Amino acid sequence: MATNPKPAIRVPILTAAAEVCLIVFLLYAVLLMAEFSCGNGEGKSLGMAGQKLFTLANFEIAVISGIIGCFVIEYLRRPD
Image (tube, rainbow, N blue to C red; front, side):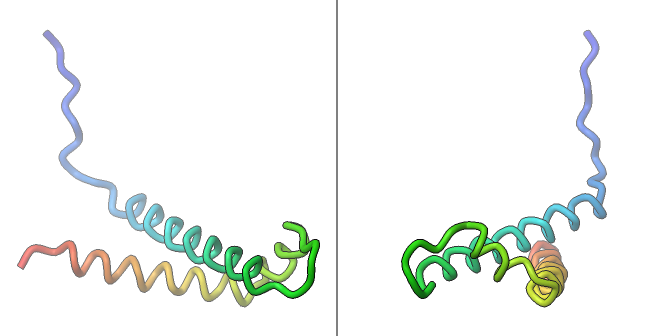
């Protein structure tokens, strides 16, 4: 009977990339919710919110926050 063993070694680069992407996604989700809750005026559309959200400055902040978050998660994951 052949079994397929699970790989014992995680791929740290893929794990870090997944963690950074999750943090970036969560940051953009919070920004989108804030844009619709505190937005001024009726009839605000997703396209209008997207123009304000997806800027280079917001992307830089999201990626830097994701990298810092990845380091914090790895620090907390380490056994003492």
